[in-house]
Image 1 (tube, rainbow, N blue to C red):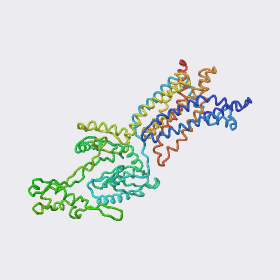
Image 2 (image 1 turned 180 degrees about the vertical axis):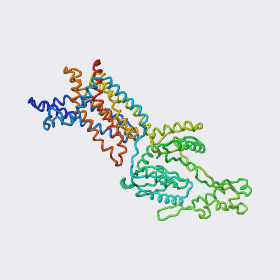
Image 3 (image 1 turned 90 degrees about the vertical axis):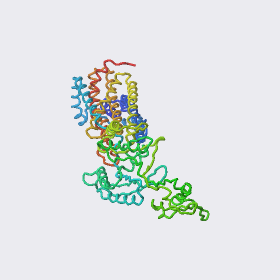
Image 4 (image 1 turned 90 degrees about the horizontal axis):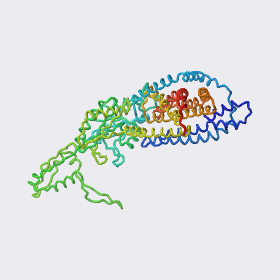
Length: 619
């Protein structure tokens, strides 16, 4: 765009002098070749933080950064080779005056530029004041990992007590599906109760993950969206006794489980030795989670509630009857569990056959108490006389991680930012929950992804800025001019911060990608403008005249670069298709940031140029 615009302007200026069109275009391309080369290189360098991301964010955004870098590299080659050739054949050259639209935009701009050059102090103070206001808003933006993508389907996870029988679980699941289908906007519900007992994806029969398919957005009740349907389903299922309801989505739940091991936005992993202490401490943490605004779908890993049949042998009683412990163990194994007795052959196939008591003689504690044993003197003694038989509650499961027992407390965040919720929750847990000696907490879930991504960006972005500063120094051969362009970056962020605040979006990884994109465009525009002003100064033009002429000539390419980028992102803001929730923060940051960064590039950068040119340090 910059090369074509410059060639168009040069052809218009040289229409009457008879000079060869090829030489004019060659001179125009050479004039902007160096700043375009360094500008594109800096944009590619700006995307370096995305290329270094790991985890889920790396899998999502590293391919984006690599694709953009490759596309920019190819476009650079095309702009410096093919574009000048096409310009020499296809462009006729512009008129000496601007088009009506450009002239309409340029008149108030030149007045504003004249005011800025007359009163530079006021412009700098105003710009710094606006920057300070945006930085004051920054802590109030809220943070999240990635905006929740609305998939058009809901997983309403239902977790029952572990001791529930399969028949009762099926009956309760059928009732749950009947309630779900009563919710407006639900098209279909399919349930799965339990899963195979393989080591990769186990799920007991007391847990289910129904997949609820929603109707298209246009067929939902007026004013409803997917969140409203989730709230309605949650309210319907709240009448089921003794269940935990966790709302999620099919794809996001699976991805979260594979990456972090849990399906909730926040997972608090409590490590310790004793199950009872773990459960008691988890209950205390649950109270804190419940008191935090925005907490929903709170659940704790069920570590108790499984019923066990306990047979405690009375050794004095068996001694009186002359019966051994081994005899009792054998009869329990044979009567209840079953014992391998023979093998059955069907052709070449072989099957093991076990025998045990009929079901009516082993399906209850009372029946087991009546199991008879024969003493050495031939007397038949019921098992109830030899042992105490009771049904007791015991651990439903014992989970371990890194060799230690652990229990997970999970919660989703609704109606507020993830980072602020976790910060408040961590403070509440630290103040209100006393961890026993040897017990520890680990915070996971989506917050784990957010924390990892932000920590990496906090390290990589300053290093990237240092590399950009080095490239700018190579381009201008001046530390002061390199610092002048770097100053554009914080001011370029003003519009992005205000846009996030006004639209209610959070500072997320896509929003960070938007800031990175914004910085690249801002640096490119700054390089193009300052390079042209310096070239005019080298021709002996006075500083003020060079600034005004440079801004006048580079107004059109700078505006075109910013306008094309904004127009390309506008559809992302108004799109309601699946995935638009992830793209919207990026578009909001870039569009809002380009509005302010373009204005500041065209006004504040020329104002600062006066001071930065006075004392420059040559290499």
